[in-house]
Length: 327
Image 1 (spheres, rainbow, N blue to C red):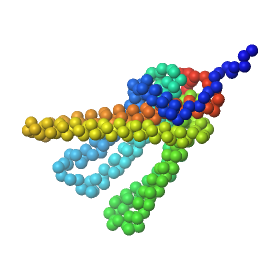
Image 2 (cartoon, rainbow, N blue to C red):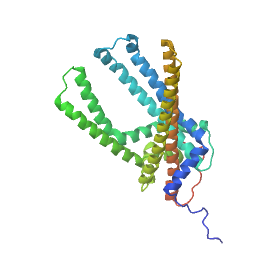
Image 3 (cartoon, helix red, strand yellow):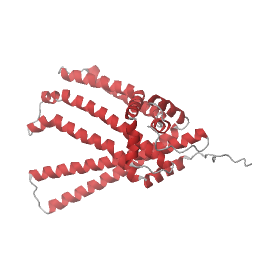
Image 4 (cartoon, one colour):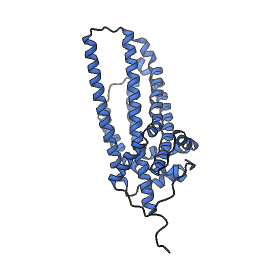
């Protein structure tokens, strides 16, 4: 009778192997991962443009006259609720994305091909759980920073509303609060590393929001440094790509300007507006694609790290998650 174990013993991946696996998965599934990741930035920019256009339309109609401070202040009761609604909407969409991306990434790491429809079907099946999980993570990690930000905005808003002269104490207090908020944000990011594997755990282990948070705390034990470095590498690669893109766009724009100037073309005002609108649409499209690609990289890293940590703890290869697993 053989003494060989029924499953091969799992050998933990090194940091270099984790990055290499993330790169392989991104290269082999780039179209799918980016298609999944396009939804949050596309929804955000589309709704934001509509809200900004609706809120600023009175100002645009008054051009070329400059709006008075009173007219600008009247926009606050309209713009703030719209932005709150946009934030809630975006959190819901982003929660769906994280669940869909976790499903697709973990399955890809297990060698299983899935589709865009299947990924979002899994996320939609428990949309409420996804939204609650994201809200809980955000609340736990960034609640102090949010409170500090609200205190700053309340102080500035009350001063503006009552048309009072700036208080010297307030002038000194705002930078101090800004520093506290920055410190709270840094602490929040560090705490968020503990919950970075909550969405894959919720999707593949059929856990409630709170159970997924506790499971992520177990999975990330001793791995937070590795997770942070992996995300830092992806951020650096994304930043470099955006820098190259912006440099290329600036060069093309400069060459186009020189070409138009050399031909002594005089564009009419409608033509200028059309070019500005087309340029804005092109810029937003590029930003959506780059945001989607960067988030796809982060989600893929979370998926690889989730499998690695799950198998480290288990000590042997576990069964492959099925596509029917509830989110």
